[in-house]
Image (tube, rainbow, N blue to C red; front, top):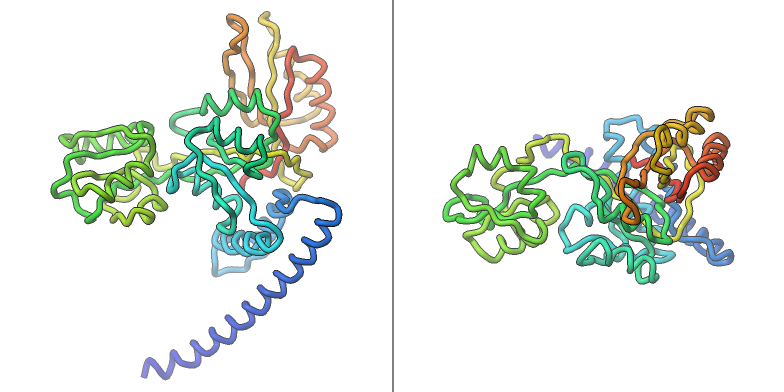
Length: 357
């Protein structure tokens, strides 16, 4: 009886799937035409501001019942597949495979790309600077641990530009090859992950040895090979090394997030909802920072982040990393930036880019 009711519904779904398939290929053919036009003018294949506009519009127009975030995931993968018909973008990231950095790559570019795992943040910058990779994705800030100092130092030195940002929730899971803790003598993870799960581990497995390793992905690899090892890792790493989840979301802070910067040689156009990142320094005297930031108030530009970092060339001198609402081409932002350039002892524009979705 139930099959009699299901059959017409399944036939209806099959008919809709056929329509979706036809529309997807129609879109792909138009994307190929766009690629031909871009090739004539040597325009970049990946335009972050354009893709951000498409994703925002898709979520805004979505009537449901699918969630807006799920609609954006679908559209991101459609755009990624269509983009790959023009050129498969190469993206460097802090490896190995299975890290949150790799997850950030897919969240920004979709899966139809060529990922290039690197052994260090420095190598990500080098590959993007040398042209080995079209873009790099580097961690810039964690809500629990604070800023990634090495990334800030390299942003100060590099000729690359920030062309996007990605913020992903950091969900740590305890995993083993069997999905059980019997016979486990070590829990392995990156030192940051161990710190972020410290209270949970103290409460649940206080007697088991904890070992810090190079990355959570490395811990997952070890757990896949050694049945006495449990790993703290993310979903991607667990899938890659065929691990089973013992406990999910064991991080002490349920709202833990990591923010990543997308770096490359592309300077993005305004998308409508943008952010601008700059670095400043001022002489070490009373009121210098207050006076320096005056142009932001005068021109009505909101500051969303202000981070200090000691300068290496002198005692008690600092670089200030500042995020501003708006794009460098916006009139009020452009005026404020020009005044900052004139007043600062050091000024560097790191990039203007679409706000993360």
